[in-house]
Image (cartoon, rainbow, N blue to C red; front, side):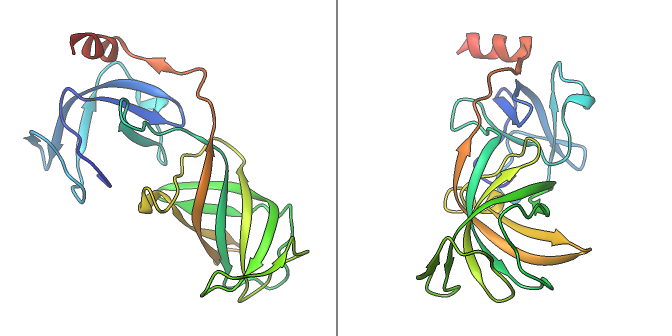
Length: 196
């Protein structure tokens, strides 16, 4: 649990697959809990969802209060730590963000900035390299759920992996969410929502 609480009877949404269902029970070390809070490492039981529909890297949240959604793109401040060459628009390394590992394209390096003060040093630079910080517009290669660091810190920081090492780290400033048109709402979720 990263933020808020999770408890039986809650209706939750998993992103990016956009599956909404009811939490049946929450447990820690095989004991039922009335609720779980941030820092708790718990398992929870949900209804009418197959194990194939949810995978590592999915994010689960309250369907009624800022439910999680996949990101269409996001703007991040990236600091290059350990890359042998220059990073240009079009670079597509793997991002490790919370438990997701997904290739993301550096679509546009918008600015090079001072890594400490954040002051803009150059607009639309051709490239960034070791020691540089840049504001980069990124697009995930497949659905991925991330958030602005200021809203949900654990979902807003990432490592950039390439050549079997961490080449950069980043903090997400803003996210454009994708519109989750298709998805699944289980009968349990419909019933639970109807009850209230």
